[in-house]
Length: 102
Image (cartoon, rainbow, N blue to C red; front, side):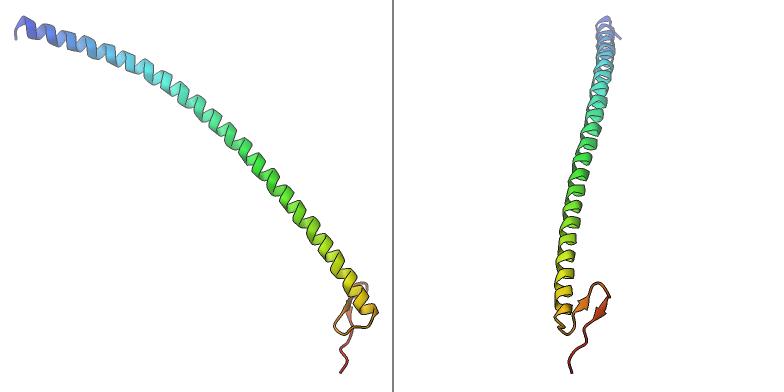
């Protein structure tokens, strides 16, 4: 091997080591950024989950309230119909059906 080839190989080795060292530092920096991004993503996902859960809770409460109002209205209607003696109506207080007129 000539001196020139040895010098080129040595220069290439030095450049490779320098690039590897630089790459390692860049990798560590990138890893730190990735970890921070993962932490931020997890926090954002947790917050989004809380928002979704609270929205679902409010929707369930609205359904429950609406169903309660409907049940109250139906009970009122059945009590009135039973008091009037309409066949098929159920008296909510006694749970007895008004017999059909045959």
